[in-house]
Length: 218
Image (tube, rainbow, N blue to C red):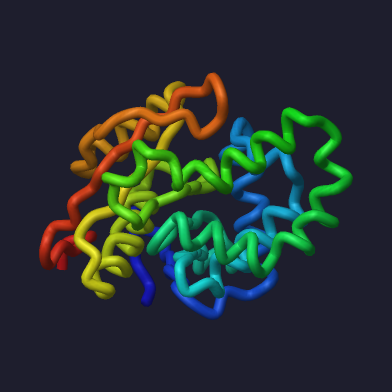
């Protein structure tokens, strides 16, 4: 389905994401979330992770393609159940991930952060949170500010709603004030804090999916 926003045409691809699109998504992640730990692991590990997310029964990866440019310009990544999503990743991809990450994991610090990322959903504070989670939204700079992030957020929300999931959580770093304001503007409520990585505060939001929500209005 094509969406017209500010005179530009976009399509949201929800399944059958190609290898070329996966590579584009990994590049967007590294460019727009460059301060994130995952981006530091390199293009190949990120591409493998996004490929897994696009095929996992617990993962959600929707890609925004520019119809004018014919390439990905944004994405939303999430999980139906974050704990099961990471467990499935470890069960199916840990061996391949080890060899892809081996050149990158040159310190105990990086290895620790990898493990923290994979096990944080099992922390006690998370047990009372929704199992579903929006993990990342990223848009290339040239396409920011036109409403594409809201469209991807809506696409993710609709996907969960179709599965009769009515609430999900969102995590965002303490320093990412712009992201916090974005989620708050859309109606997410701050629910607490957690340390995904030692010494780094992460805010946790809850978002209740409104019934029959639609964006943009018809």
